Image (cartoon, rainbow, N blue to C red):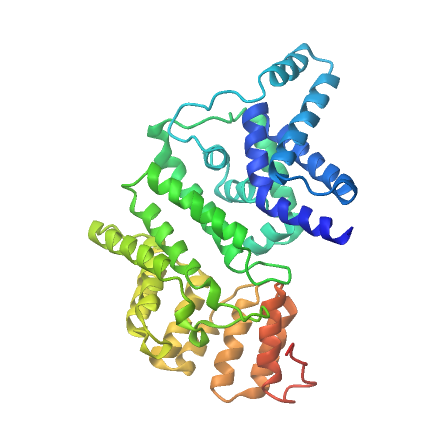
Length: 416
C-alpha cells in the first residue's frame, strides 16, 4: 500500500499546492511562512498517510495541517506580535473574504506576485512556484535556464518582497491594467507546462491546464474589455480541445497532422472560436489574440490536409512582428515548410538558436527527414532526444529516429 499513498501525495501536491499557499498567505499575511507551513504539511502527509490512509478531503487536510503548523511556529516565536498573530489566527481561522476587484485567493496571489517592484522574469518565476506549484527544475525548463540560476532568481524575488514590504492585498481597479501583462504571461506559462510537461512520463498535466483555464476565465470576468485577456482564454480553450487526441490509449504522442479530429472537444472549439471572433471585431491585435487565431485556423480544418497554411503563415508573420523570438520563428518555419517546402523552412531554422531545448533539433530533424537527408536527420534526432525531458516526447523522437534505419550510427530502439 505504501506506493499508492506516495503517488496520491504527489497528485495532491500537483493539484493543491498553489491553492494551499494562497489560502495560507491570506490567513497569515506572510508568503514565506505560508509556503513553509504548506511544505511541512506535505511532509507530514508523506509520513502519516501510508499508515492512516488518505483523508476524504486531501486538499482541505493540507490547508488545515499547514495552518496548525503555522500557529505552532508563531507560538514559539518570542515577539509579542507573533504570539498575537497566532492567537488571532486560532480564534478567527476563517476571516471574511477581502473586498476588492479580485476575490479568488489564487488570482489575488497572481496579482500580488506581479507587483511592479519585481522584475518581469521574477514575477513569472515566483508565481509559477507559488500559484502553479511547479518545482524549481520545471520552472528552469520553462525559462530555458539552468536550475541553479532559477533557484537564485526565486530567492531574490522573495527577498525583494520582504525588503520592499510588498503587501499581499487586492490591487485597486485602477492598478489592474499595469499588472495585466505579467499575469497573462504567468497564466500562459502554466498552460504551456500543462500542455506539454517538461519532465515526467505523461505528455500532459491536466491539473495545470485546468488551473490556467480557470484563472483565464476569472480574468475575463474581471476585465471583459481587455482583448488580450479574451485572446488568451480563446487560445487555452482551443489548445485544450485537442487533449484527448494528442495521445494514444497507451500515452504515446500523436502529432497534430495525425490526430483523429473526431476526438476534439467540439464545445471548447466553438467557445474558443467565438472568442476569436470577438477579438477580431475589436481590431486591437496582440500576441495572445494572434496565437488564438492560428489555433482557430487549425480548428476550422476538417482534416490536416485541409488546413489553410497560407493563412497560418500570414498570422505567424504578424505574431513575429508583435512578439519576436526564436520560438515564434521556429513555429513560423513549420508553416513555411507547408507553404514553400522543407528546404525553405530548413534555411530559416538554420538561422535560429534555442539552447537547452529539444524543439529546434526536433524540427530540424523532421525537415531533414522530409528532404531525404537521413544521416543528418539521425544526428539531429539524437540531439533532440538528448535534451528532451518529457518521456512521451522522447519516445516519439526515438520512434522517428528508429524509422530512419541504421544511418548515422547505431540505431536507437523505439518505445513500441
